[in-house]
Length: 152
View (cartoon, rainbow, N blue to C red):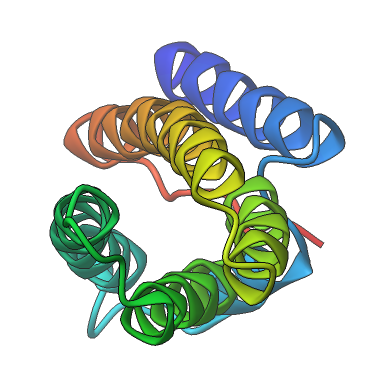
């Protein structure tokens, strides 16, 4: 039982630090409340879809920004979609990076857009690595016969 307790504490401490560092916001905690015994992997499944969508959006944005003539409406549509999906899982820093990105699109500023793409990618890969650690901890807790702690 001690192993489970240590894993649960590690999980709570990790989520708390990720939350306080601003990587995740209250939306992630709301998402976690939707997990139950009938669907213990609900959050991991939703976040996995976010990862898949994000990879596609990053590739679409890179492609769109490297055209001879940049279609800023198309770029903005991709950024808007990325902002929405990051908001829905509580990826706060990604969402904020998308807000800045949209400002550069409005100004049709290619240098600004390229810089924002790098920032969005950096924030996305940071939150992705944090969430992967979180899900590994969840798997370890469940494999040891424990219950993933709910956060207030």
